[in-house]
Image: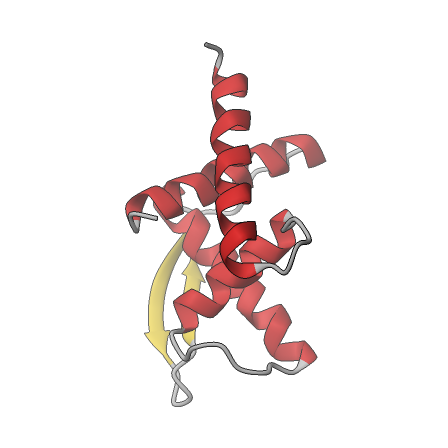
Length: 116
């Protein structure tokens, strides 16, 4: 089985599982999954977030997802309990399709590590 087919199958299973648990009938998008990871990493439970907080949640998730690849490293929690990361290595220039593949791989790895 090729790497692309394996990734697609794992992705489809993960999306279905997350959709069943967290969405009301609408299939979660990659952005929705990244948002969920941000909420999980913030660790303050589900609550209403302002627009700028939602953007920050997605940033937290992306940093956490790309940390194992050596792009980011956790730095500290601020006074409000929000995690902050520092850039270790600049992200390479990737085409949109390559970015999507990287993020899907990182998301699958994230959920494997936490045992979901």
